[in-house]
Image (tube, rainbow, N blue to C red):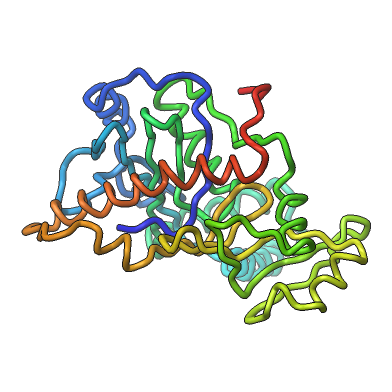
Length: 305
């Protein structure tokens, strides 16, 4: 399992729970499938899936966990169509208008009848707590999705003092300056994708794909006041990604250099391969995330939890 997106939070206090203690807390909120009349269900599942039983996969001071969410698919259009049909039948039968309370009751009855037959959609979201580096990292594409994960984890732990990263300089200003000045840090390489936005005009943005980001056309946009919102980068020939000005990281890919850094070690089981892959990622993140904050001027000291 390789992370594809990162929403990284800073731990505002040392994480004191052991793997065993965290396991015990999560077990009280383990995932159970939706019942016939449940719209949704969520809970913790083993990160190794069918290959493991533990809810916490511990490795080198980090705890990998996995949240499973299940939602019943009951389209509003289906409910609305059935509701209108029943209302029409009742009004024709009783020669009167259906009142608001009756309408609501009919709707509840329809949902009650359809739920047991509704299809379910499930998704899993991985995250890990790095007690060494002081991070909580969630593998998802937006902070809103990450907050669903962290809020549920906080409910399990009673407390979870975390905050998104904060740096002394705005990432948007730094990334804009890289392109405007052609001064790219030596350990970074520009990709061919970026999103530019106009801070003076809401919703005004330019999306660049497969384009030379150091071309004069890009510089002209920057000279006119556009700012870099997202930027494709490679770091140290070890990983590539899209860095967002909100500190989230998307479309993360590790180079063969990283994936083959295990040397002659050949895992014999799924669990061994899973553990090896996670350890490789963990090592890279422990180097890359602090470096990213450094590139954006260094971590701000006045962060609030």
